[in-house]
Amino acid sequence: MNHNNIVEFKHVKKSYFLGEAEIKALKDVNFTVEKESFTFIVGKSGSGKSTLLNLMGAIDSPSNGTIIINGTDISTLNDNELSDFRAQNIGHIFQNFNLIPVLNLYENIEYPLLMINMEKTKREEKVNAIIESVGLKGLEKHEPSQLSGGQRQRVAIARALVKNPLLVLADEPSANLDSKTSEEILALMKQMQETYKTTFIFVTHDRDILDKATHTYELKDGVLGVNHDK
Ligand SMILES: Nc1ncnc2c1ncn2[C@@H]1O[C@H](COP(=O)(O)OP(=O)(O)O)[C@@H](O)[C@H]1O
Ligand SMILES: [Mg+2]
Image (cartoon, rainbow, N blue to C red; front, side, top):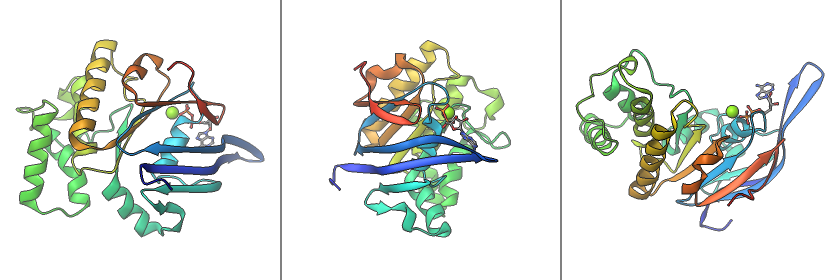
Protein backbone atom coordinates (compact mmCIF):
# COMPACT_ATOMS: atom_id res chain seq x y z
CA MET A 1 0.00 0.00 0.00
CA ASN A 2 1.23 3.42 -0.97
CA HIS A 3 2.07 5.27 2.27
CA ASN A 4 0.10 8.27 1.04
CA ASN A 5 -3.07 6.18 1.16
CA ILE A 6 -4.89 6.04 4.44
CA VAL A 7 -7.75 3.80 3.32
CA GLU A 8 -7.68 0.97 0.83
CA PHE A 9 -10.64 -1.17 -0.30
CA LYS A 10 -9.82 -4.36 -2.19
CA HIS A 11 -12.70 -6.25 -3.82
CA VAL A 12 -15.10 -5.18 -1.10
CA LYS A 13 -18.63 -6.53 -1.27
CA LYS A 14 -21.47 -6.10 1.15
CA SER A 15 -24.81 -7.85 1.01
CA TYR A 16 -27.76 -7.66 3.34
CA PHE A 17 -30.17 -10.54 3.61
CA LEU A 18 -33.88 -10.04 4.07
CA GLY A 19 -35.19 -13.55 4.46
CA GLU A 20 -34.21 -15.27 1.21
CA ALA A 21 -33.52 -12.06 -0.64
CA GLU A 22 -29.95 -10.84 -1.04
CA ILE A 23 -29.50 -7.09 -1.36
CA LYS A 24 -26.12 -6.36 -2.92
CA ALA A 25 -25.41 -2.96 -1.38
CA LEU A 26 -21.75 -2.89 -2.54
CA LYS A 27 -20.44 -4.83 -5.52
CA ASP A 28 -16.66 -5.23 -5.75
CA VAL A 29 -15.51 -1.81 -4.57
CA ASN A 30 -11.82 -1.04 -5.15
CA PHE A 31 -10.41 2.33 -4.22
CA THR A 32 -7.98 4.25 -2.08
CA VAL A 33 -8.23 7.46 -0.11
CA GLU A 34 -5.25 9.76 0.04
CA LYS A 35 -3.97 11.01 3.38
CA GLU A 36 -5.13 14.55 4.25
CA SER A 37 -7.57 14.62 1.34
CA PHE A 38 -11.09 16.06 1.29
CA THR A 39 -12.68 13.15 -0.52
CA PHE A 40 -16.32 13.11 -1.65
CA ILE A 41 -18.41 10.17 -2.76
CA VAL A 42 -21.68 11.17 -4.42
CA GLY A 43 -24.61 8.94 -5.11
CA LYS A 44 -28.38 8.77 -5.03
CA SER A 45 -30.38 7.49 -2.12
CA GLY A 46 -29.97 3.71 -1.87
CA SER A 47 -26.72 3.63 -3.87
CA GLY A 48 -24.75 2.27 -0.89
CA LYS A 49 -23.21 5.43 0.59
CA SER A 50 -23.95 4.77 4.26
CA THR A 51 -22.94 1.14 3.83
CA LEU A 52 -19.58 2.23 2.42
CA LEU A 53 -19.02 4.76 5.20
CA ASN A 54 -19.95 2.25 7.90
CA LEU A 55 -17.40 -0.21 6.53
CA MET A 56 -14.77 2.52 6.46
CA GLY A 57 -15.57 3.45 10.05
CA ALA A 58 -15.31 -0.21 11.14
CA ILE A 59 -18.90 -0.05 12.37
CA ASP A 60 -19.82 -2.92 10.07
CA SER A 61 -17.77 -5.57 8.27
CA PRO A 62 -17.77 -6.53 4.59
CA SER A 63 -19.21 -9.79 3.20
CA ASN A 64 -16.05 -10.14 1.08
CA GLY A 65 -12.81 -8.33 0.45
CA THR A 66 -10.23 -6.43 2.46
CA ILE A 67 -10.27 -3.01 4.10
CA ILE A 68 -6.96 -1.53 5.17
CA ILE A 69 -6.95 1.59 7.31
CA ASN A 70 -3.64 3.26 8.05
CA GLY A 71 -1.79 0.02 7.29
CA THR A 72 -4.06 -2.22 9.40
CA ASP A 73 -6.27 -4.87 7.82
CA ILE A 74 -9.25 -4.28 10.08
CA SER A 75 -10.56 -7.83 9.64
CA THR A 76 -7.62 -8.98 11.79
CA LEU A 77 -8.86 -7.05 14.85
CA ASN A 78 -11.08 -8.65 17.48
CA ASP A 79 -14.11 -6.80 18.92
CA ASN A 80 -12.17 -5.07 21.70
CA GLU A 81 -9.37 -4.04 19.38
CA LEU A 82 -11.95 -2.75 16.90
CA SER A 83 -13.70 -0.56 19.44
CA ASP A 84 -10.35 0.84 20.58
CA PHE A 85 -9.40 1.40 16.97
CA ARG A 86 -12.62 3.32 16.34
CA ALA A 87 -12.35 5.35 19.53
CA GLN A 88 -8.77 6.40 18.74
CA ASN A 89 -8.89 6.87 14.99
CA ILE A 90 -12.36 7.65 13.65
CA GLY A 91 -14.54 10.72 14.05
CA HIS A 92 -18.12 10.67 12.73
CA ILE A 93 -20.37 13.46 11.55
CA PHE A 94 -23.97 12.52 10.80
CA GLN A 95 -26.83 14.03 8.88
CA ASN A 96 -28.91 14.31 12.05
CA PHE A 97 -25.96 15.57 14.12
CA ASN A 98 -26.55 12.77 16.69
CA LEU A 99 -25.74 14.92 19.70
CA ILE A 100 -26.58 13.57 23.14
CA PRO A 101 -29.65 15.61 24.21
CA VAL A 102 -29.01 15.40 27.98
CA LEU A 103 -25.44 16.67 27.70
CA ASN A 104 -24.58 20.32 27.14
CA LEU A 105 -22.39 21.54 24.28
CA TYR A 106 -19.14 21.23 26.27
CA GLU A 107 -20.00 17.73 27.51
CA ASN A 108 -20.98 16.52 24.05
CA ILE A 109 -17.58 17.52 22.73
CA GLU A 110 -15.74 16.12 25.75
CA TYR A 111 -17.44 12.73 25.45
CA PRO A 112 -15.02 11.08 22.93
CA LEU A 113 -12.08 12.04 25.17
CA LEU A 114 -13.68 10.27 28.13
CA MET A 115 -13.96 7.20 25.89
CA ILE A 116 -10.19 7.17 25.40
CA ASN A 117 -9.49 7.93 29.10
CA MET A 118 -7.72 11.21 28.50
CA GLU A 119 -6.85 12.94 31.76
CA LYS A 120 -8.81 15.98 32.93
CA THR A 121 -6.38 18.85 32.33
CA LYS A 122 -5.55 17.69 28.84
CA ARG A 123 -9.26 17.15 28.13
CA GLU A 124 -10.15 20.68 29.17
CA GLU A 125 -7.39 22.09 27.05
CA LYS A 126 -8.48 20.13 23.96
CA VAL A 127 -12.21 20.80 24.37
CA ASN A 128 -11.74 24.54 24.93
CA ALA A 129 -9.39 24.84 21.95
CA ILE A 130 -11.77 23.11 19.54
CA ILE A 131 -14.80 25.07 20.81
CA GLU A 132 -12.87 28.23 20.03
CA SER A 133 -11.84 27.07 16.56
CA VAL A 134 -15.36 26.11 15.47
CA GLY A 135 -16.70 29.44 16.73
CA LEU A 136 -18.86 28.25 19.63
CA LYS A 137 -17.19 30.02 22.53
CA GLY A 138 -19.69 31.23 25.14
CA LEU A 139 -22.24 28.49 24.30
CA GLU A 140 -20.61 25.74 26.42
CA LYS A 141 -23.57 25.33 28.77
CA HIS A 142 -26.23 25.25 26.04
CA GLU A 143 -28.10 22.04 25.41
CA PRO A 144 -28.46 20.77 21.82
CA SER A 145 -32.16 21.76 21.78
CA GLN A 146 -31.15 25.40 22.33
CA LEU A 147 -28.90 25.46 19.26
CA SER A 148 -29.62 26.09 15.57
CA GLY A 149 -28.96 23.43 12.92
CA GLY A 150 -25.72 25.12 11.89
CA GLN A 151 -24.55 25.35 15.52
CA ARG A 152 -25.42 21.69 16.09
CA GLN A 153 -23.38 20.68 13.08
CA ARG A 154 -20.47 22.76 14.46
CA VAL A 155 -20.73 20.82 17.70
CA ALA A 156 -20.71 17.58 15.72
CA ILE A 157 -17.60 18.72 13.83
CA ALA A 158 -15.85 19.66 17.08
CA ARG A 159 -16.83 16.33 18.64
CA ALA A 160 -15.47 14.42 15.63
CA LEU A 161 -12.18 16.34 15.63
CA VAL A 162 -11.41 16.80 19.31
CA LYS A 163 -9.35 13.61 19.60
CA ASN A 164 -7.47 14.51 16.40
CA PRO A 165 -8.50 11.30 14.59
CA LEU A 166 -6.91 9.85 11.47
CA LEU A 167 -10.21 9.95 9.64
CA VAL A 168 -13.35 12.04 9.84
CA LEU A 169 -16.30 10.37 8.14
CA ALA A 170 -19.32 12.50 7.28
CA ASP A 171 -22.64 11.01 6.17
CA GLU A 172 -24.69 13.65 4.31
CA PRO A 173 -23.54 16.44 6.64
CA SER A 174 -25.41 19.13 4.68
CA ALA A 175 -28.71 17.31 4.29
CA ASN A 176 -30.50 19.08 7.14
CA LEU A 177 -29.03 22.54 6.55
CA ASP A 178 -30.12 25.39 4.29
CA SER A 179 -27.73 26.16 1.45
CA LYS A 180 -26.07 29.17 3.10
CA THR A 181 -25.44 27.28 6.37
CA SER A 182 -24.29 24.24 4.44
CA GLU A 183 -21.74 26.41 2.61
CA GLU A 184 -20.45 27.81 5.93
CA ILE A 185 -20.21 24.34 7.45
CA LEU A 186 -18.29 23.00 4.44
CA ALA A 187 -15.89 25.95 4.61
CA LEU A 188 -15.38 25.27 8.32
CA MET A 189 -14.68 21.59 7.67
CA LYS A 190 -12.17 22.49 4.98
CA GLN A 191 -10.47 24.91 7.36
CA MET A 192 -10.43 22.24 10.10
CA GLN A 193 -8.95 19.73 7.66
CA GLU A 194 -6.12 22.14 6.94
CA THR A 195 -5.54 23.01 10.60
CA TYR A 196 -5.69 19.48 12.01
CA LYS A 197 -4.23 17.66 8.95
CA THR A 198 -7.02 15.09 9.17
CA THR A 199 -8.47 13.15 6.25
CA PHE A 200 -12.15 13.92 5.57
CA ILE A 201 -14.38 11.52 3.67
CA PHE A 202 -17.91 12.59 2.77
CA VAL A 203 -20.80 10.71 1.29
CA THR A 204 -23.58 12.85 -0.10
CA HIS A 205 -26.35 13.06 -2.67
CA ASP A 206 -25.76 16.82 -2.87
CA ARG A 207 -23.72 17.69 -5.98
CA ASP A 208 -23.70 21.37 -5.05
CA ILE A 209 -21.10 20.82 -2.34
CA LEU A 210 -18.46 19.13 -4.49
CA ASP A 211 -16.48 22.25 -5.30
CA LYS A 212 -14.25 21.99 -2.22
CA ALA A 213 -13.32 18.36 -2.85
CA THR A 214 -9.79 17.26 -3.60
CA HIS A 215 -11.05 13.88 -4.90
CA THR A 216 -14.53 12.81 -5.99
CA TYR A 217 -16.10 9.44 -6.75
CA GLU A 218 -19.54 8.35 -7.75
CA LEU A 219 -21.46 5.42 -6.32
CA LYS A 220 -24.17 3.89 -8.53
CA ASP A 221 -26.09 0.82 -7.40
CA GLY A 222 -23.21 -0.37 -5.28
CA VAL A 223 -20.54 0.23 -7.93
CA LEU A 224 -17.92 2.89 -7.25
CA GLY A 225 -16.47 4.78 -10.20
CA VAL A 226 -15.09 8.11 -11.28
CA ASN A 227 -17.31 11.13 -10.94
CA HIS A 228 -17.62 12.96 -14.24
CA ASP A 229 -18.72 16.31 -12.84
CA LYS A 230 -15.26 17.31 -11.80
N1 LIG B 1 -29.50 -3.05 7.50
C1 LIG B 1 -29.95 -3.24 6.26
N2 LIG B 1 -30.70 -4.33 5.97
C2 LIG B 1 -31.16 -4.54 4.71
N3 LIG B 1 -30.91 -3.74 3.67
C3 LIG B 1 -30.18 -2.64 3.89
C4 LIG B 1 -29.66 -2.33 5.19
N4 LIG B 1 -28.96 -1.17 5.11
C5 LIG B 1 -29.03 -0.77 3.82
N5 LIG B 1 -29.75 -1.65 3.08
C6 LIG B 1 -30.02 -1.58 1.63
O1 LIG B 1 -28.75 -1.48 0.97
C7 LIG B 1 -28.81 -0.53 -0.09
C8 LIG B 1 -27.82 0.61 0.19
O2 LIG B 1 -28.25 1.34 1.33
P1 LIG B 1 -27.44 2.57 1.96
O3 LIG B 1 -26.01 2.17 2.09
O4 LIG B 1 -28.16 3.00 3.17
O5 LIG B 1 -27.57 3.66 0.78
P2 LIG B 1 -27.50 5.26 0.85
O6 LIG B 1 -26.80 5.66 2.09
O7 LIG B 1 -26.75 5.63 -0.40
O8 LIG B 1 -28.91 5.75 0.78
C9 LIG B 1 -30.26 -0.09 -0.17
O9 LIG B 1 -30.91 -0.90 -1.10
C10 LIG B 1 -30.78 -0.34 1.22
O10 LIG B 1 -32.17 -0.56 1.22
MG1 LIG C 1 -27.35 6.96 3.64
